[in-house]
Length: 145
Picture 1 (cartoon, helix red, strand yellow):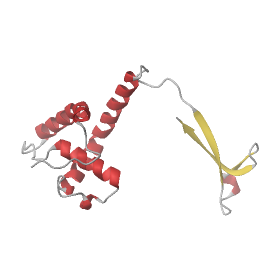
Picture 2 (spheres, helix red, strand yellow; picture 1 turned 120 degrees about the vertical axis):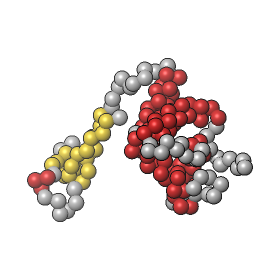
Picture 3 (cartoon, one colour; picture 1 turned 180 degrees about the vertical axis):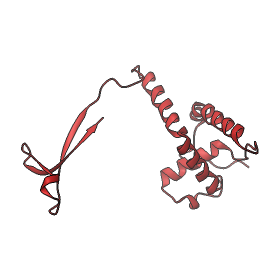
Picture 4 (cartoon, helix red, strand yellow; picture 1 turned 90 degrees about the horizontal axis):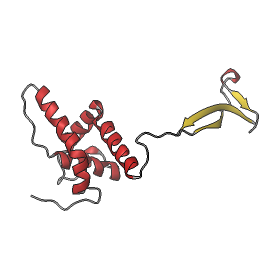
């Protein structure tokens, strides 16, 4: 039975970008499994359910019934994070976006900034410093973008 799409569902073009990576991951997982059972979950629907949960912020158990079972979605979400598949997909998409805008695949520029943060009243003086320019007693934290 076909369901009505949610606003966050993957379009066919979007699914075509990540489907080979997910399929390859699934085939590798089936090869390593004891039973060799590929399972019955539609992985595109699993991705749609993860996007739904991410977008709405609902609890896993509150996923709509027309999406795959919440436990299956959570199971795949955990496996993909554990195996690093989510990071590989993000890296692939990032590289494609950069190439489409005619930029190098990897960034060639880094911006470094620092922020002075005031220390609480009970923080020992030996663990803090003074930013003389801003006249702030506390700690500095750095960020590279």
